[in-house]
Image (cartoon, rainbow, N blue to C red):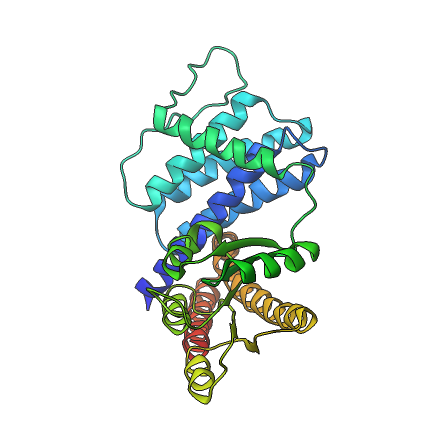
Length: 319
């Protein structure tokens, strides 16, 4: 069970690191400094707390330092490029620590004169440049209602679906090959997949089966020209969120995907709410230690482990 929880933490930590990097690169391009700052601080604090829970001492100490350094910058209502670069390097170092890699990281305040600036490797710089380009594309763009993959071997269908989903302010990625969509699942993080059934190389049922292994709660809507009993039964076994027959009504599709995405977001919220208990473990545990309540510390730790066990049982049933 401990290994399962640690595996979950590894996955969720990567998403938190991504969020911190996005916010760091956005902090000079937005008027809402507090929003970016709070996002970065929350990420650092969460990783620190979880690292303490799982006994990853080096990562916990690392995040403790950068969290305190970050907090010292809050009153400035701005962040120098030296600090941004330093924090990006700190995040990259934290990723490596989480993987168990050896990391040499210099702990200092980059805004103080007289300190040697941290060396950024060519690989680190390439990562930073890539992230900067991604953030620049997002600036001044209305937030998306969600990311949707549309998979169909008919380009005309892809064009039609993309047009009305884009009008509803969804970010749409289209694929004529299900295997390609599957390869980009982790990178583009869709909130929902719309797929045809009959396709070459990998059909819609096979796609749903693979998606269910990698992203078990990710909603999938099937659009097919032949909605047979077998198609319905096989889709239900894979945990389908909805099925539409071609030609479909765009209004029905929008209504169906809104319900599915809302349910998916609720599941993620439940997951994050439980994880928050883990991330706050360090602070509460220190408080109980400070008041000399060893029995309450042990009780809290036991209750938290039981909650995590129930979480695993719940999500296993959903799978």
